[in-house]
Every structure is written in C-alpha cells, then in structure tokens.
Length: 413
Image 1 (cartoon, rainbow, N blue to C red):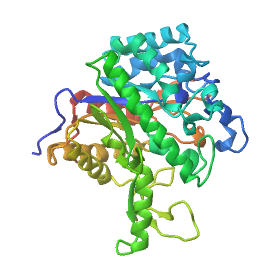
Image 2 (cartoon, rainbow, N blue to C red):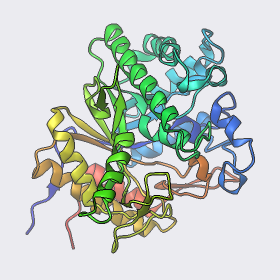
Image 3 (cartoon, rainbow, N blue to C red):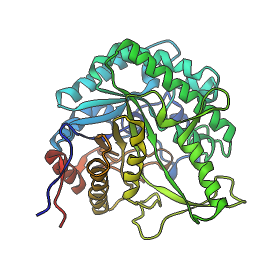
Image 4 (cartoon, one colour):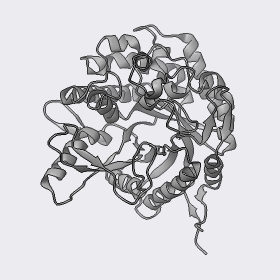
C-alpha cells in the first residue's frame, strides 16, 4: 500500500485574491478608468460590484475556514488608503484592520500584497510606474500600512508579478496604459518596480524587523519550439529576459527572484513553445506543447512545469510559497484533476528534490473579475451568481478542503 503523500508540518493551505477583482466599488484607480474605455475588457464587462467581498468578507472567510484553509493571500487597495497624494483615509484603514482581524479570528494567516496591478488615479496622472520617482511615491503608502496594520500581517508580498505587469501594459496592450511593443517603456517600468520593491522591503524591515517579506514572481515557462534552432532559442532568451529579469543601475540586470526577500513567491500557470517569427514583434509565434489539457485561456497545462520552476528556485536558498496556481475552466472536473496533478508535482519538489516549499495558495477562492478577460474566465473553487452574489461551493472546493485538512494528497486510484 502506497505511503500517504504528506506535506510538511505547518504547511500553509490557502487561496489567493486581489482587491480589485473581488472587493467591488474601486473607482479611484487606473483599472477602473481602463474599464470605462470601449474595447479593453471582454464582453464590455466592468468590475463594478465584483464579488462584493468588501462587504461580505466575513462570510467568505468563514467558508474558507470550513474548507480547512489555514492561510489567505489578499491585497490592499492603494487607491482606497491614499486617495490623494499624502492624504490617508482612516476609515479605509479601519476596514482593512477589520478584514485582517477577521482572518486571524478565523485561524488563517494573512499574506498581504501591497501592489496587485492597480494604482491610484493621481499616481497614474503623474506617469504611473514609467515616471521618474514612482518608487518613492509608493513608499508613504507602504509606511502607513505597516504602521497601522503591521501587527496583523504574517507574510508580506511587496509587488505582484512585476514582469507580467510591465509586459501586459507596455508590450501586449492588455493592461493600462495599453501600449504595444514598447520594450523601452516596459524596461523603465521594471526598473522602477525593482526600486519600489527594494525600498518597500527596507522600510518594512526597519519598522518591523521580524517581518517576513517577499515578492510574487510569475514563472511563465518558455521553451524553443525547435530545440536545435538558434533563432528559436534566441526568441526564448529575449522572452525570458523580459519575464524573469529586471534592470539595475547601469547596464546590469538581476533575476527578479534574486531581489531582497525573506521568501520567494512563485506564481505559475502555464508556458509556451516559442518559434522565431520575423514578422511578429512580440517574441515570436507561441505554441502549446501537444497532448496536454488546455485551459479556457488556451494554455496547455503541463503539471511537471511547476516542479521544474520550484527546483529552479532552490539555488537561491530561500523558502518558497506557491503564491498563485490555478486553471481557468468552466468544467470543474478538470479543476479537480488539475489540483491533484499540480499538488503531486509540488509534493515531488519537496520530497524528492528538497525544495523548501512552505505553502500553496490556489488561485482563486471565488470566480471574479479576470482583468481584461472580464467575468468569462472562471478560476474559483466557489461560484458566484452575478445577479444575487450567492456563493456555491464547487466539487473542487470540497476536494481542496479534504487535501488541506489531511495535509496530504488523496491516495491514487
């Protein structure tokens, strides 16, 4: 009889969310303005009330606790806390104090993300993350959050997916400011995000020396479609540079995951094979490896990629949390298979490769506003009725709860 595939004692099991995608009523940030412009969001969707988690967080957290979640990753909305430069809203700070306190009362460790894709309108009007001094403009918000809420936070995530933010906003045009093929702009944004992360890391550690601070990096796995092709390998290298590195002073570069941090957060969903194409300027032609399930995004789900991504991080000598991992699908049976297959690879990375993985945050708890894809992409283990806001647990929610409660994967059939 096979031994149970158990995870380490104290392993964190949770779901991850972002404020703008679930809270509702965020009208003072760049994404809200972006949504009002025709053609940016699928089906003309707007975030609107989202999942109304701003008002329903208590019941949502109780549901997650019943599903044996012992942690939760969430973000704090900068535009609520600092609606105008240098002015901080005490009511919103009290709200987030209540949110974090409720999480702790429900027995869940909060991982708080300070920037998850959205910025205040006043910040955007100054040029956003492409502008000189943008990193310094971020720090007063960070300092106020640390001072007001720091004792309630167990894990800090400074910035979510800086490389995805830069490429989607300045290369592919899917995020504000909807620029395309602006490599210099993307590189400038990444330089400022690196400085913002380093500044936030230092500030948090100065004010709370025992704080555990990291960054969430998206590892999109790129491989050459023709391994022997010099051109394909070159296209992959160019793509990996923008997705895995950011600029430092002078002409130096740094792996994003090598930044100052007490842990590394890994976001992983998929990857692509890349074929050099002299006509397409966006790296080349992207292809799926054949023979694997396809998400509603059109991405292949190759479970062993997450193990490879985790093993790649081992050499940095830091604890790792899987800060996002999920699949967009309306067929929940696919999500159930995904969870078992992906977590089996995470377990192998721990048990066979010796990677210090300390938690898994599934993306996401509830179906929500999926940025430029609107509400048509379903990532949640909980369905939300768009009219009534009624929550319904999917079979995958119960499966995730059983895994978390046992701290182990079910026996293979």
